[in-house]
Length: 131
Image 1 (cartoon, rainbow, N blue to C red):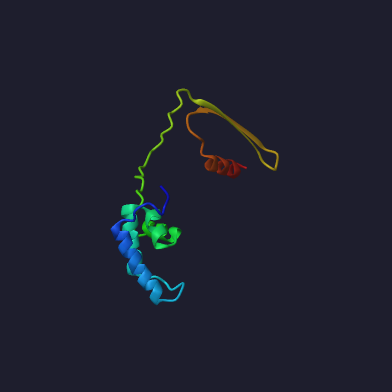
Image 2 (image 1 turned 90 degrees about the horizontal axis):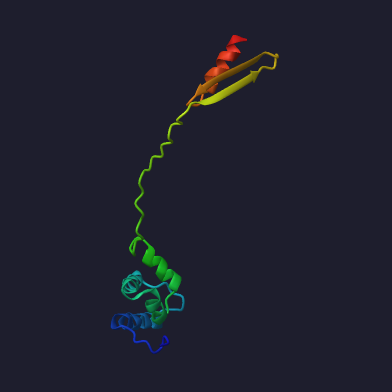
């Protein structure tokens, strides 16, 4: 079935007549009244964007945009949930080796077993203060 043989629903045909009257009374490219757009959006909700835009000679993208806008159909927002990811603690402590050398030539080597990250800032500050 092509577009021309498909019957136009009466509500769309009625809006089509209103549009023809408006277009015959106004210059080409005159902005359509908001009431006509609202009627077209409502019909597009019921019959689909193309089924309304084509017979009414409306801008498909414009009608679709209005349909998705604040007064149109809102897309379902996905529910966002907080997900906490907790890393499992290592079963065995890991060995950590830290070697520091100052510009003056002093050296320090620290070796220990730990399950967490060392406090690097405090460690460096204590070493600098000791020099």
